[in-house]
Image (cartoon, rainbow, N blue to C red; front, side):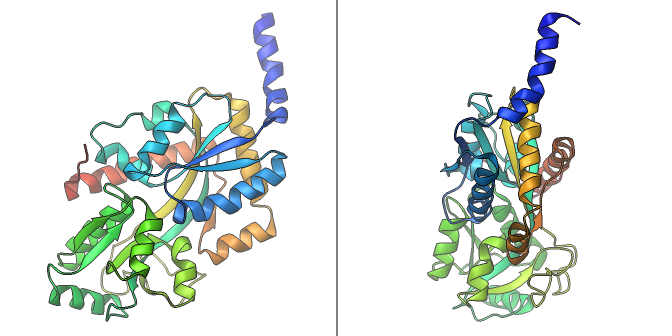
Length: 315
């Protein structure tokens, strides 16, 4: 074996054990207070504890998550910049005409960190407690009702369009710069309803500040068993879930990718972490890098079809 190759072979395990030796920046491509933030904060706290180095969140919102993703893609491939991002990245591949990065080429998938059912939540001023009542209200107020989202080209935006089509209504789409600002607008009664990850809406549902109309998963959430599915409420086949994952810049040493994956799995061995994810209505992550990469490819294909059917294009 050539000396250089032998040195690289030996260095891999050593690098994995040593990393991280300094703080790690975790880019969250949405503003504070949204679904991604809800996942990122407890996870980075646990990773900091396990690794003995701080995992510091850097919120970089805008353009449906693509600004932060581009920043991560262009960062040094040394393991000290991590991207924690949601399903919106899979949507952006088809929705944006000129992305400043290539998802599969410029970013390395590490693992999933959470999978949530989405939930349709309405402002308390909206006189509807069920999905049929909301649809009837929307039809009676055609042109006046609106659906907020985390931004143009996000899954939340597409859920609004899909709901319009499935329910035969015409709600106006109102984009925000992330789920956090959209939720704030909903709490203030500025908009009528939004689709968001169950985890980010959980607290507001429990304290009665938002009305949970339906979850958009195939079955009810074990954490919120009283919320019916969209399917059982009259819209069979209307299914949307949210997922969140970790990426590293392309070229990051494989040993670091494996080390980060191992740390995430270790985090979910913690009972408090598992209980927190259950309270949020989420399934814990931990998929292997190869499995996550394959999953992302299927999501890109799925959402690409939805984007084309909805006619959504963003410059």
